[in-house]
Image (cartoon, rainbow, N blue to C red; front, side, top):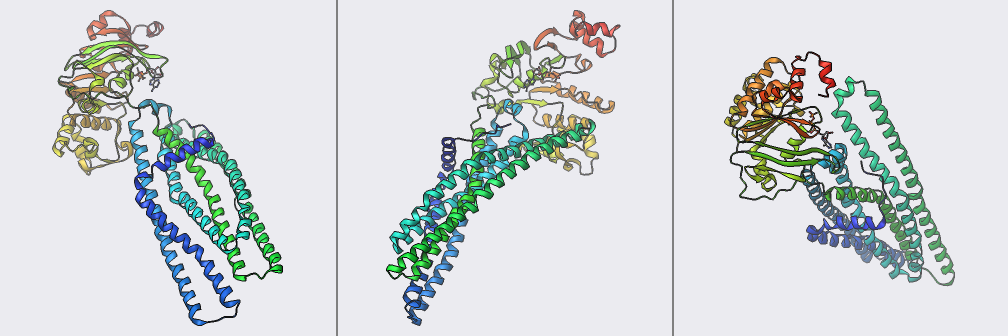
Length: 600
Ligand SMILES: Nc1ncnc2c1ncn2[C@@H]1O[C@H](COP(=O)(O)OP(=O)(O)OP(=O)(O)O)[C@@H](O)[C@H]1O
């Protein structure tokens, strides 16, 4: 989980510059949008000047001449209409650019997530990653769509208004400039106070997401173990903390947003009116100038208010951007390959040479693993839970990088191969067969266009999945719900077999299912596995020793080391760990307690 941390001003600036870099490819439309913005500002500022001319030159002087007044009115109307149109156009342009930028950012984040190594996913809750791709990029979108547009628009308007005020009355304009430091101070205070509460708020939303995600994924366990109340309590606690953070935020906003700025606004009007009152005793003042000033001051405070309001989103976007950039800079990448074009898998010979591996860099979970699986041979990994069987598969599949020793395929280091070459030739079937939302066909083909409908049917037939698929109302076009929850685990397993067989890999890696499957399906699965293994180098994690008695080599793992090796008969004759496991699994141990005591 990300820590609640307020970014320093320097860090915020760095994040801001990096965000702005995303706008670089859109420089031409941005310049166009800025030009539109300039025109809009000119339009906004000229309105009060035209009214000032109308008041001072015509009304005050009682000089009601139809021609010039109508011309003035027409110009005024034209400027207002043109401005409305230009405003629409510039806002559309800014939004378009913003959406394009955010689209790119999302693509970058998603590609990065896919390039990350499993170590990253081990330490990061799924909810947090989802939050990065959705909520955080959404917050950044807000920054580009409204925050920056309003900041820039307000800045332009601000300059335009001051220019107009200086044209009308230098002294009074200079007086108005005095309010600037006060406003800057309010904005600074607001930013300072609000940034911490925003970070806390965003962080809590991330935690709420993570909790929700955990609850949904583990729903069956939650219900079975009656964890509903605990989960609700934890969720409620987080929700209450979110509420408190929200209230804290509202208080800061309530105090510093509109009220503080409005107060300065009123003081400014009072000072301007007093100034006019005092000077009117010495010189005649033009009522039109007074109108224009009061109008400008109101217009000037409106953008300030808007900018203040946008600071909320700005803060949010900076925090979100910092998190997204942290993800983009994540160094925990998937193992890198040398992509040697000469490295091609021909026979599928696998050699582990003194491989030592650790997940955390501290504790070795595999120690000095050495074995060879010759082409077409089956090597079975057995051992108690936590002995390192899955870890061997994890490094063989290049899910995790290993530092010591080497794994060779057909005599070349596994690190030399192009990852596609490895993935195309190594079929992996895990215990929990993951099915995607889509049809059965999609799930077997996995969008590989080289696999025809015929290939799919053949693969299904090969693993005997065709029988149950054909009985489904829509056959191969039957819809698979999320994670394939409407299929039995045996059926899911058969579909996963078919998916693997459709690619016809040279190497098979199987994590044999431990789930209880009815005897008939079990039989089908065993037959399918036997056929699949024929002519393929196979590494299989076996939970039941009965299924691997014909393996060419059985490796018995204990605490990350290979403690016994040989075929079934040899290992039984050794009367070691394998022998004890075999007796236990077959209920043949005369005194099971004795065997267990022997630290099986
Ligand atoms: N992703 C991981 N991060 C850190 N440690 C891990 C990770 N996966 C496994 N381990 C640790 O590595 C050791 C070996 O685990 P591994 O999953 O390889 O055992 P296994 O023999 O496959 O067990 P099982 O039969 O229960 O699947 C264990 O101590 C386990 O706690």
